[in-house]
Structures are given as C-alpha cells and as structure tokens.
Length: 359
Image (tube, rainbow, N blue to C red; front, side, top):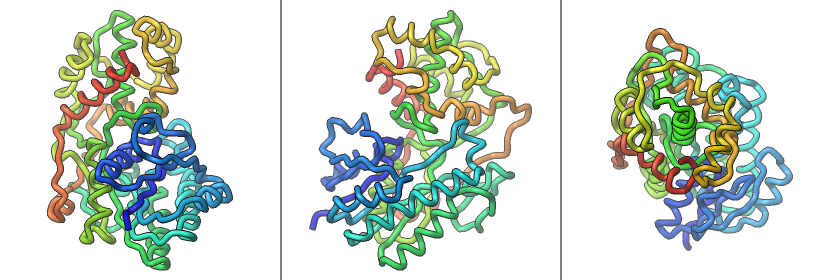
C-alpha cells in the first residue's frame, strides 16, 4: 500500500517544503490549511481546506480523508505582535486544541503509522532565561508558559492509545521562500532593502550588538520530516535541527547586499518592524515601478518583521545569552544533511526576486 501523508499547515514555511519533499519521493500528499498554498499550485499535491480551530469543521474535512498513514503537523496560531503571544494563555490553549482537533478527527477513519510534530528552541526556555550551551534533547524540560508541552503530552498519550509512532523536531531560525508568514526573515530583509534603496539610503545593518547565531534551511527541515517518517530509529525521539554551523549577521550582511544589488552601508540601529509598517505608500510605488506581484507590506512580511527585531537583537546593549543547540543526536542517528547559512539566505532572497515578490 502506498504511503499517504497529510501535511497540516501546508501554507506555512515548513508545511510547503515538506509537501514538496514527500511528493518528490513519490508519496501521495494531501496539503491541508485554511488557504490554498501559493507555492504548491503546480505540484502534484491534493489540497483540502481545513480550519483547525473549528472542531466540527475539522472533523468534517477529515471524514473525506481515507488512507492517511502519516501526518506532518506544522500548523501554529500566533497572536499579533508575535513575541508577547508566546506566553499568552489564549495562544497556548488554542495551539493545544488545534492539534487535538486534528488528531481526534484523523484517527477516526485512518490507521496512522507516524506523526511528526514541530517545536523549536523556545522549548529550552530562551525566552525566560539563559539556555544551557549547547541545548540537548536529553536535558530536562524547562518549565515555562508555552504550548509545546501541552501538544507534546497530548501527542504522546494519543500515540499510545492509537498505536502509532511519532517524532518531534526542533529547528532553529528556519529560512525559506514563503512570504506573509510569522517567522521568515528573507522577505523582511528584501522589503527593508528595497525601501532603503527607494529612499536613497544604503543597506545598513539595523540590529544591535553582534552575536553568533544558528539557522536552518527549510529544505533541511522538510527532508528531516521525510527521514523521520521512514526510519524506525526516529520513532519516539526528539531532534534539534540546524544547518550545522554558526554565523554572524554583520559577516553575512555584505553577501545580502550583493545578492539584492544594493549598496552596503554602516550600521544604523533601528526597529525593522516600525520602519517597514510606516512605508506602505512607498512600497506600493516600488511595486508599480518594478512590476512586482501586487502585495501589501502585510501580505509580504506577515508577523516576521517583529521576528526580525528579535533576531537582529534590536535595542540590546549587551549580547543576549547564546542560543546554541546540539545536532549531534540526529547526525548520529543517520540524518547528516547540512547547508551553508549564507548561501541559504541568499538563495531564498534570489528566489523571492525571481518570483517578483521583491525587486
């Protein structure tokens, strides 16, 4: 019997990439999200509209799904402003209920073999205090308000009850092609650069103090979902994911400027979120001048401009505590894919230019 995977949250960064990875390997792929994923329009992938926050609507959508053997759950509910919502009780409860609605519905008429769940490095408590360095999957839970533990505890109990396997993945700063999502930096940087150039200004690094960081290309995350679904050693395990190296924004900034064909400038600390949202009229002039796809700034950046301020350490006078995770565990298990972070970031900027999302 051919394996059939349900990708939940398919219009998002990881969901889109995962659907492409599974389809590439010949899987039957059903992509589920509230809106049709733009980047899957030409792929051999079936789409089903699904509102995970509506229990009855979710159940009705799942009634039409037969033969689902695997689920990759990448959906997330975020409140406006992004960061403040991470500890908000409403956001935590909603995300827990969304996963519960999906798995309660899909297990009614399908015999699941495996579910992959996405978490992130917030699991290690970076938002409430310094992380251990490096953060390892074997370390005890850092007890703080977040929806990861709510989802994970439900998944473990549900998997035991319905006799399926699961894997939890914790990627670090995912980079990819999707615009209008909650946490993806290339569209934000591309818009910021275009606005600066339109105002006759160079591409200044807008952040605060410099620091070393880690990121992960979305193609790596997607392929790790495929690997987890097809390797027994991944069952019941949790894995960190990075490109396999650290980087500095200031060291990467010249390559970004070169990729976008804009002049490089001296550092200029500013809030990217505030800068972008004040310039809608200028952005529309840029869209017209360069014959771009007609998107508003909100349609381009989603909530990712708030994420940019966090990642660039805007307003920080001292380096924030390091956020480094170990990927030894997944490498020793056999998944050894890596990416050059600078090349990854510039690749997706070029992709956005090629699709006329940014000039």
